[in-house]
Length: 156
Ligand code: ADP
Ligand code: MG
Image (cartoon, rainbow, N blue to C red; front, side):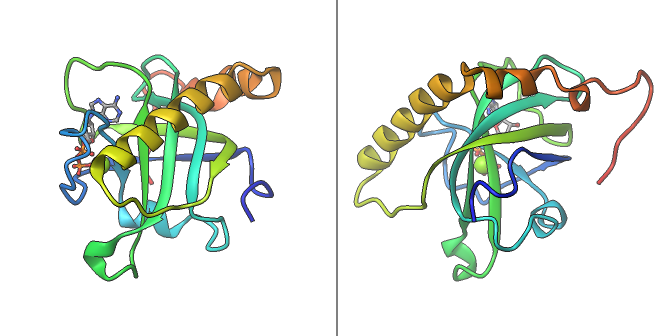
């Protein structure tokens, strides 16, 4: 079930990932904590999604998101990782990431090389940009979810 839960709203702290070198591949992914990951519906399909993301009370940007299984933990630990389609000056570990997942792109796949993985992700990013320009997706960029009341802190 990929579409049934969409749009899906989620907010949580950005934690250290598993150091699989996403940043070295040019595609950093902001990881949610285990607690946030466990709050996802267990039958929300693993795979690649698109949507909107905002760090703290910053601007809302397009994003691609992967919901997957972590080989490091023998595939028993799910991870939810957001690549924001924006260039940030600094890392933002410890900050609150707010996302709304608006569309599904593809199921989880294995790749034989890092080149194949990178080119698949580049295609996902292009597909995300296209989907997110459609009115049903665009309207969620303006959702009140992204406008936190001044001075209010959020924790998950
Ligand atoms: P980790 O394994 O710790 O998740 P990554 O190589 O995936 O490391 O890098 C993720 C970190 O990079 C994020 O937690 C965030 O602080 C930073 N970062 C910088 N730019 C972005 C971006 N455009 N999208 C996501 N994370 C970014
Ligand atoms: Mg990561």
